[in-house]
Length: 266
Ligand SMILES: *[C@@H]1O[C@H](CO)[C@@H](O)[C@H](O)[C@H]1NC(C)=O
Ligand SMILES: *[C@@H]1O[C@H](CO)[C@@H](O)[C@H](O)[C@H]1NC(C)=O
Ligand SMILES: *[C@@H]1O[C@H](CO)[C@@H](O)[C@H](O)[C@H]1NC(C)=O
Image 1 (cartoon, rainbow, N blue to C red):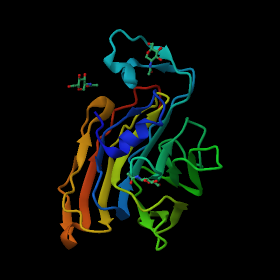
Image 2: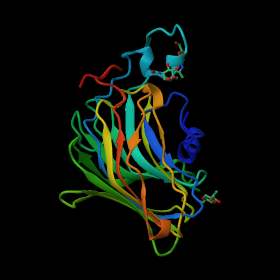
Image 3: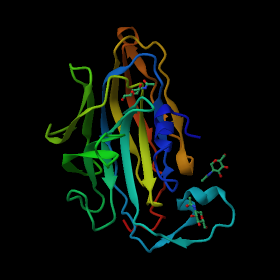
Image 4: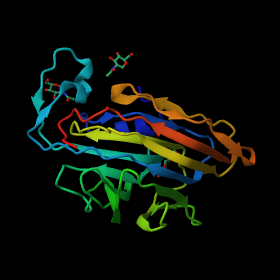
């Protein structure tokens, strides 16, 4: 179902209980990405249910199996939405907007808000963790717009993620990591862990600009619908400089659900 390089790279590492919402992506490209920027308006974050509450069968990957009964949730729900960039085997650069268990905020967010952080997922020699999050994190309201830039530095090795509030220009989060100059895929994710409450409002990505090292004449976005079959939409990509720069005016990631059904209360 999810055909992209980006998500197939992820599938090897995420837990079996993860489910996915609608997404768009492209890749693998022939040339490599040197910069990617987008503006996200995330919509309201759904409240994430506590451990011990009931999971509706339609909130899970088990929806295709017949006869599943309601069961008790072993872990609190966790939802994250992100634009991600990868080469399929190396680091996944991903600034994440996170929705944690209701009443247990990650960085001071209230119900309906997100916590945003630059982060990278991969293998880090000498470290036990597979995910490094920026220490700087910020609260994002559903109607806020944030600009997320991934830039390859002049050393051709270091990627810097910068997250700003689009209106105020305030920097919400920033992270630089050695993630190498081989990025060939970019896309969006709605990633649901522990049978989370999925999205209940659309996420919009506007003014997305991908810059390649050399012209990339063929650039096609692929859309998928995820667990609830609500396919993502996008405007036709437009190229500049013979295909070195590609622009997508608007990507719409539909809400997974019209209202909370997975045990959240908001
Ligand atoms: C599917 O449901 C069964 C019982 O209904 C449960 O034991 C199993 O863990 C579920 N699998 C996933 C991936 O959620
Ligand atoms: C992906 O990046 C890693 C370094 O991060 C590199 O070792 C690997 O060769 C790259 N793979 C491809 C297919 O470019
Ligand atoms: C999604 O679409 C597939 C194929 O058309 C169908 O089998 C499945 O029941 C649909 N799932 C939902 C949740 O609508």
